[in-house]
Length: 209
Image (tube, rainbow, N blue to C red; front, side, top):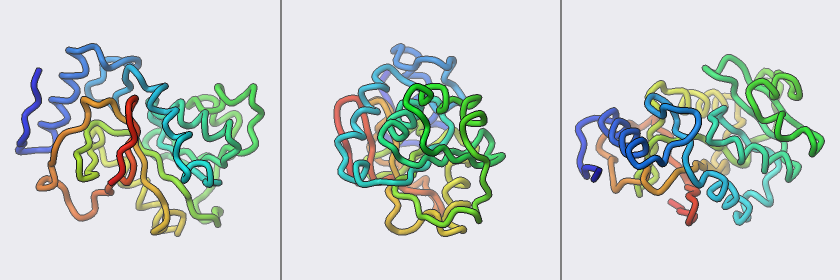
């Protein structure tokens, strides 16, 4: 399947990405990937790329969406002694993971485990800004424009945190994708409130915008 280079809607882009990842067996558990932030073959290698970032090494406080594709990044954050803030599915609440014993990290970053090992927090209880904001992605272009699954959760998470001063101008926005999720340019479909990405991790490279 060859992706188009012009699109009329965001949903058209999402549909093509989901179809291509399915046809080429790039998507992996949870399946099917349609309607989801897709997990992909090579996610471990892409996640490991974060260790090459000076910004990650310096970071103390990281946010992650609950997407399965970010599972390994959450593990790496805790293994490297970062404080980790996670939004629960549908942004019902926020959970803080801190000082998790190494043997418990793998369990702590799951949806079930974050409730067991983390602390539910109100955003007005947090007084430190985030260093890195990690978000899952369906498609991203070479201008740093990102598409999620279409529910608006990613942008809502960002702006909720921004309202409380937890996201500021120094916060790095990062995502992780397979190479087939990167397309040329869909800037014309974006709105001013759509959050742009600064760094993209793939299994083969790090892209900066």
